[in-house]
Image (tube, one colour):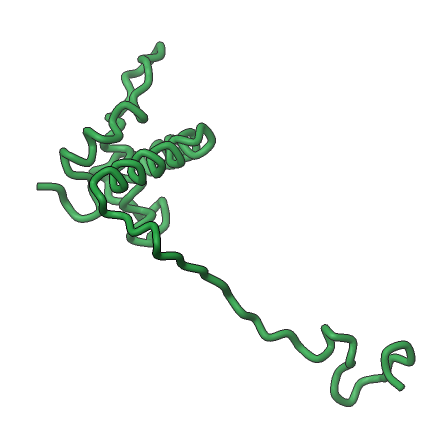
Length: 126
């Protein structure tokens, strides 16, 4: 059984080929799955990279692997694969749409009205 924020065996088999790389020269690389579990732990928990548990390996290695995968578009491919798989199983309702927005109230000064008690701008005030 997978621990919290870690991929199960079934989930890993779906995306494993996206994360495997050929062996380079030098020191053997740490497990891709372990690195992905470390990335998921940081992203899901909201902790800093330096606060990541030692069981995932050095935080700098996990962060570097995260940056490499992000730059290569590995996470985009993973999400596309997940979307296709869920759609094949009928788990996505294509009639449901969501729009997310953030509303920030602007000050009066941003509309050119000037601040309270401040000097009036002759171009915007009559």
